[in-house]
Structure formats: structure tokens, C-alpha cells
Length: 165
Image (cartoon, rainbow, N blue to C red):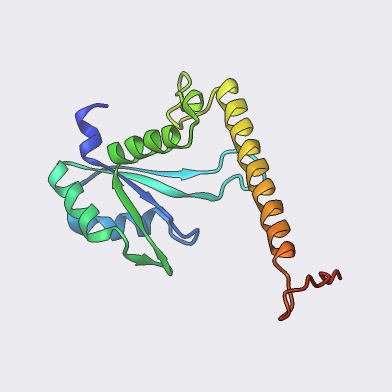
């Protein structure tokens, strides 16, 4: 990460009605905006629609920190903005991946792309972990249902049949 990451903000949870111009108007009071990257879907059925997040780079890190402090959590079109230093976003994503046990699913950037594409093996690992989590969730739900049925007793302590609909 270079020093420009301290000047660069990640802005997330953007409502689809927010335009690039609106975003710049919202963030320009805090300092000189050097660059703005408003991300769009490039393929699929949502092609041409906003992705719901953007990056803004200020001329100084103080301006970026002030904008973060003032804008994080602020409502825009009824949604609270998520504003972080771009370096914090990167660090949080890395920590999240490690905490979920997807160590081998770390995102790697492909040549010519800064969008954080996952490798094929990372995608497979992520899918396997998701399936395992779903299986664990399903088995715990079955155990809970069995426990609920077993605890169905009437006032005299006798077992009552469970009603199935």
C-alpha cells in the first residue's frame, strides 16, 4: 500500500439514486478532491448500473480523515453511508477472510485489474466453506427441532403428540 491510501476513501452502502455529481457535492466541502472512482457493473443483467460504492481521493490525509469523520454513518437517500480510509477497507477485508477460515480464499489482483478478483481455487475454497457452514446450520436446526419435540409435555408430565400440518 502506498501513502496515497491514506488520502483515499472507500464510500459504501450508496443508494442507486446517488450519482457521481451528487457524491462529489457531498464530499467536496471537506477538501480538494483529486480523483473519484464511481464503480459500475460492467457485465450481466445489471450492466451500466451503479455497484453501490465508490472511492474518493483527497489532496491530503487530513482532508480524508475529516470527511470520514463527518460522513460515516450519515444518511443519504435513507441509507447510512459507510466511509473508511481505503487502507482500512483493505485491512478489514483481509481480517474478515482470515476470521472466517477462508485463508486460502484470499483475494488476489489479476494483471490489469484492481477490482480484487478471486482466483479459481479461492472461489472453490469459499464455496466449500459456505456449503460446510450451511450443512452445520442445517444439522443444528434438526437437533433443535428434535429437542423441541422431545420437550412437548402436558401438565401431568406425559408426552403429547406433536401436531403436523
